[in-house]
Structures are given as structure tokens and as C-alpha cells.
Length: 512
Image 1: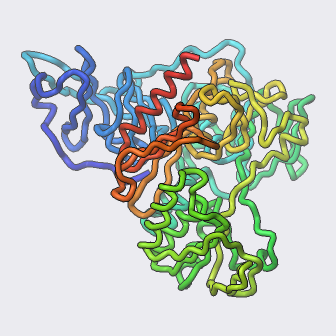
Image 2: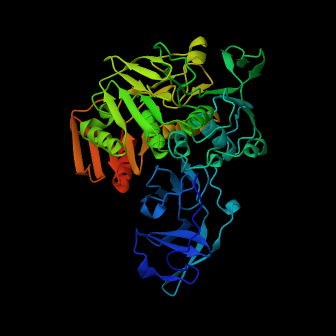
């Protein structure tokens, strides 16, 4: 989350503006009292909603209007212009809506509408499961529980998490919170009171060890069991652990949980130098955050260039240059062979001094629970288009799920926060009988200092990268193509183009 915008900019919409000042298809920001309000005109209809996304307060005036929806330019949340409903993660909270009147050639915003007037909930199906259990307290698990209650599911929801902290905004752990620019109270996806208020039985520090599909029970590490009618596996991924000598030292860290982040921040308060192992997104975001704290950062990675395998050589070179200008020292085509006290020994024979080490060498899906239950596994938990596994009544979402991608035509598994949230939402609908296929285009963003990279689509491989704009000038769009077809796009400061590619991919999937 981020601080709310309360500055009064633009015209006072309660006093009216001329209809000619808002041409068809256009957007305009004004204010009603202290609230910033976005006006959107579509033909004869004019919508008035909050001007900022409820996720990180992205400016919706810079977003994309498609049909009766508006999409955030920053992280691709989507809202219903009629009701304000958050249709897609990463936003969950709705936009406020205002009533609009047109008279004498002018548009007037006349008052905020009540949420009760705006409900767009579909009728619940008759065969409603009584007990839903969610295993996992991350993006997919939270999104599923939240969507179930938003849809007014009346049954029992038990949410099991082996973490000690309630669900948090994990992307912030490697970005603003780690750098010290965001307070910890920004991190919870909801306050603790939310769960009790919405009758979500959130059980922290609780490990599920076995599924009994025959009796439809989850067996816990303490010997207890919980019955379910529908089960969602959202166990996520865990960091790949170093196996080199010295990897078990107390000054060696990974970053996945809030506890991990707190431990790194505590180290950072007195440290002068850190070695980051791995030039992954997590590794480089950690490097940027710790440089912001004034710590000397060395990155050791086997790659020829950072992120080149995912974003291509041109963007890889730019990212390396960006970090080097901020003082990061790269040791590429290199790996650590051992850690001895405060020394990181390299395969080449060199040694780097480090007050602490952060390993960002990848993650692996936590599929043990699914495997022992006899579910179909193929580099993840295999699900169908509705996110249901090979076990009846058992669904999977998030980092563990391998699903049929209607755009690429293959089964894929991705480890993106927004994808996990959207899958959790779709799984929630299907657990209560909605029969909705998961067809969202994968999306993620990565932050490096003041540069945000947005990536939409999925391209494991490509035969052409078309670069529009100037990467070095931080104004570019890269299209990753195979046989002339765009599989994915990465952009800097070209948010509308990125959103338009997302919409084009959605339309192509719908036509299949």
C-alpha cells in the first residue's frame, strides 16, 4: 500500500465542467472536496471513480480504459467503472464511485455513492461446499479467501500457513521496505482484524503434512486433522538453498518471508559490505535496496549478463549499467565455492569480504503435499483450465500450479506475485461452482532504483526481440517474438503500450 492522495488538483467537479471538456473516450481528473476523482466518458455515459488505484495508488488517468473498465498503468489492476469493484489483482479494495448528472451542456459530480448501491455479485450456486480449506498464506491463498468472502460465500474457510506472520505484500520485501523507504505497517495485505471480522480461520505457524483424499481431510503436524469439501493448495515456493561449505553460517540469508527481511535489515544496520549470490530479480532488487542504505554491494553470478535469459541482451546490458552506476560491483561468469566466516571464496580463486551474504539463486515449488497425495506432478502440480488438480475437489494456484496457457498453447508454471493472486481468485470462484477458466495474461514488475520494468506475457524462448524507443534513455518497449508472433513484452515508461499488448493477448485468447 501507499499513502493516500488528498491534494485538490484539476477542476472542482461539484461546480461542473463543460461536456466539450471531456470528449468521448477521454479521461479527466478533478476533485470533489478533498477527494481526487477520475471522470471517464464512453459515449453518452460518464463515470466518476477514485483517481488512484487502491493497490499502490497508481494514477488511473494514465491507465487504459477498455469497455466499462479501467486498468492501472503501474501494476495492471483492473476496476469496474460502474461499480468500482476491483476485478483483478493486485488490487483488492474497490474504488469509490460518485454520481454524475448532465444538464445544460455541463457535467456535475453530485455525491459519493454507497457501496450497497453498487453490488455486482452474481447469484450463488445452490450446491455450495460447506467447508473450504486453503493451504498457504501467500498471494494465492489470501486472494482466494478474500474473493470467497467478497462473493458472500457463507461456509467455513480455514487458512493454514506455516509462516508466523499474516499474509504480507511480498514484492515490497525486496523493494521499498528493504530499502527503508516504506514502514512495516504497509506490508500486511489486511489487518489482523480482517480475518476474524470475515470469519476466516487463519491459523499461523501451522503445517499441513498430509492430504487424505478418501476421507477429505488435511492432517497437521501436531496430529490434528481438518475436514474439507474443497481444498486449495497454495503452498508457493521456497528459496533454493546453497549447498556449498559454509552455507549454514548465521550471516548467510535468503529472502522470502517477513522474518527473512527483518533479519537482513538487522544485519544491514551495522554492515559495510554484502555479497549477493545470484543476479535474479530478487538478487538485483536486494542489491538496489541495500545500495540505498549505503552498503557496498558485490553481486556474484554465473550469467554473462544479469537477467539476459529473461529480458534479452539489450535489457541485460542496461540493467548491469544501471546498477554499476549506483556502485554495484558485478562478478559475472563466477560462482561462490565456499563461505568461511566473513570471506566468500570464488571458484576462480578470488575472495570477497562480506559482513553478510544474501543468496538469490532461485526458488522451487513446494509440491511435497501434492506428491504424497498422489496428485499428478510435472515440474509443478498439474491443473486443468479451471485450476483443479487430478484429485476431485482439490485445486492448486500460485507458484506450484502448472496450467494450460491458452495463449502460448503449452502448460506453463510461472512464479509471479500477480499471477498467483489472480489464480487464487479464479480458484475461489471455481470452488463454489462458477466454472471460470483461468485465462489471465501473466504479468510482473521489477523495481531497480527509480526504474520500473513491466513485463506481460510469457516467453521461455524467442527468435527475435524488437526494440522500440531507447533503452538507455529509459523509454522503451521490447517485444519478444517467435515466428513473428509476440509472446511477451517488457517496457520502461511505456505503460499504455504494455497494457494494450495485454489486452491484445486477451482478445486473441478469447478468439481461440
